[in-house]
Amino acid sequence: MTLGDQLTQQALTCGRRVTLAAAPPGIVRLAITLSDGSVQHFERRTIDGEDGWRATDFEAPGAGCYFDEPVTAEWGRGLNALTC
Image 1 (cartoon, rainbow, N blue to C red):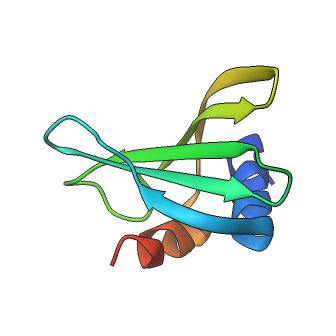
Image 2 (spheres, rainbow, N blue to C red):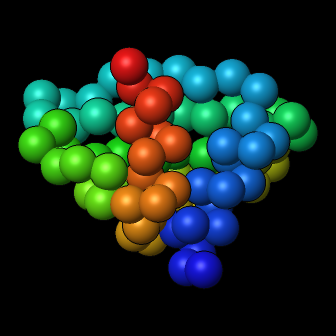
């Protein structure tokens, strides 16, 4: 499993809230708040399908980091379901 898939699995299984975040035209951006209050972000171009997702910013109280990790279509399906 890739790092992007691991981040997605954690967000989909432990997420408490999903927000469609503001994004430039042509981009879909999700913010998933985890049980500890941290937030994992994901984004894809609107023309991409379930295999176009990337795990990006991770925000945590007092810390944070940036990822640019691809998410496979298997886990991208779950992210797509949240955008409907």
